[in-house]
Amino acid sequence: MLKYILRRLLHMIPVILIISIVIFGIVKMAPGDPVGTNLDPKATAEQRAAERARLGLDKPLPVQYWNWLTRSVKGDFGDSYIYKKPVSDVVPNFIWNSFLLNIVDFILAFLISIPIGIICAVKQYSKTDNFWTVFSIIGISMPSFFFGLLLIYIFSVKLNAFPINGMVTPGKNAAGWAHIKDVMHHIFLPALVLVIGSMASLVRYTRTSMLEVINQDYIRTARSKGLSEKVVIYKHAFRNALIPIMTIIGFWIPGLFSGAVILETTFVWPGIGNVMMDAISARDYNLIMALNMFFALLTLLGNLLADIGYALVDPRIKVE
Image (cartoon, rainbow, N blue to C red; front, top):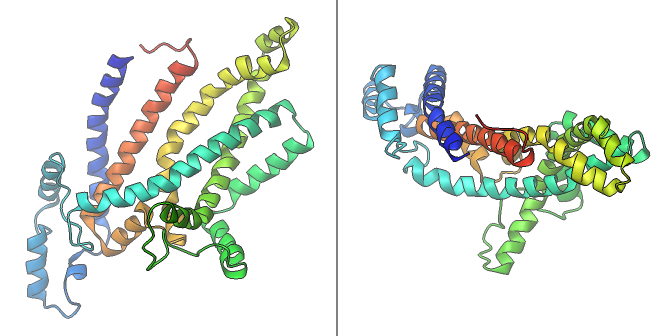
């Protein structure tokens, strides 16, 4: 297994390289540049040309990419044009804010959705199953930003129960438990939107996977041996049903961050979603590249974790 993991990690290097080339080309082909962010709108053509030269934007694209790549492999992703400091100092703080929001979503959605999906499969076509089927369809169909705006209108505008935006109350320099409660108060609505959206998908996937398993011959054989229904479902059926679910979870991990971009903008949550939107608006090339490479690396690692999960869940799967 260790050799397989090391081999997969080595295979990621050319994949990351190709992804970086594609993203760099797309970013550079987009209209506009960051010169307008750094200069006064009334700047002369000579001043703009000097600024482009200072940022290295006057060089051919292959040269620009090579300069970015040689710096990046050393951990230097350049300076952010809008934050006026190194990208390596900007990104980590916002990543942790997004991680906090998404880890709440991941844990709650997983703990709630898996048991519900199992119950729906065991009690197929019951009222419980029908309710969660409708819930899943609505949750998958409804855009997260629309649901977020709906919750803001109900809980923030009408009931004034939760703050509309941000991570902490402005001007409130709370510490310790008071700070934790303040963050929990602000995180409730955006986390609720993410959890409901994640539950909608995961309940559906779990139900479908369980239904495929519990109709197999070996499950009927286990029941005929006199095993209790609890042992049949949770020891024999659920373990095999986890295999396709592991694939979903593997790709779900990077999707938590990339999918929260619009939601973070809706709730003005200080995460990488807001940073990405600001970077795109200002054509902050260095920041855009760093964030996209983070998403790409997270996707590859999620895929690797899914493959490792296969072997852990099902011993029949051998890594060659």
